Image (cartoon, rainbow, N blue to C red; front, side, top):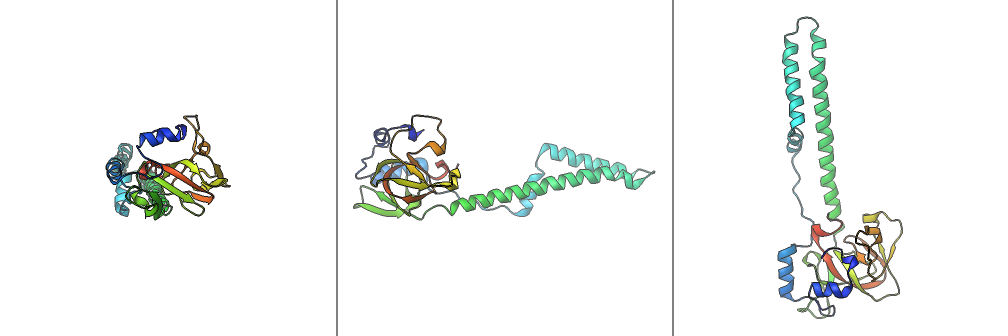
Length: 233
C-alpha cells in the first residue's frame, strides 16, 4: 500500500487482512513472500577491477575521444616538423580518459561499499505475532513480510519499514539519524499524517528499517521490506 503514513491503522489491517492480536497465517506469509520477496538487501558480488575499468570506456563519447586520440597519435607519427608538439594533443586526450576512468572506478567502489555498509544495519531477529506461533515469537528478520505484526522495545533495531498501530509506553523515541540525519531521537505516535507528500522526517507514525528504538515499546504492522524500505531504495 502506498503512503501508509496517511492511512489509518484500520485501513492497513483490512488491506493486509490481518488481526493485530494474532498476526498472519502461514498461508498469508507464503503468498506475501512470493509477491514481495525476502526482507533483505541483496548481496551483489563485487566486480573485478578490470571489469570496472572496461565499463568506464563503454560510452559513446568516451569511444569517440579514444578514436580521436588514436587518429591524432597516428597523424603525429607522420609529422616532420616538431614531433614532440605533435604528440601533445593525443597525450592530453588520453590523460583525460584515464582521469575519467579513475573517477568512475572510485565512484563504483564507493557505491559497493555503501551497499555493504547498509547491510550492517539489518537486524538478525524480529519479534512477531503469527497465527502458527504462541504469543510473541522470535524469527529471523529476513522472514518478515508486509502485513506482519511486529513488536519493538528499547534497544531494538527496526527490522523493516513499519506503521505504528499501538504504543504501550508513555512515549516512543526512535534514533533515525542513519536515514534522516537528525541529531536527536524522534518522538513517534500512531496518528495519521494526512500529507501524501510528507518527507521521512515528518512521518512520525512510521518506523524505518535500520533505525533504533531509543525508548518505549510499540506494536506495528510491516509496510515495506527489503528494497522496498526507505533505506533500501
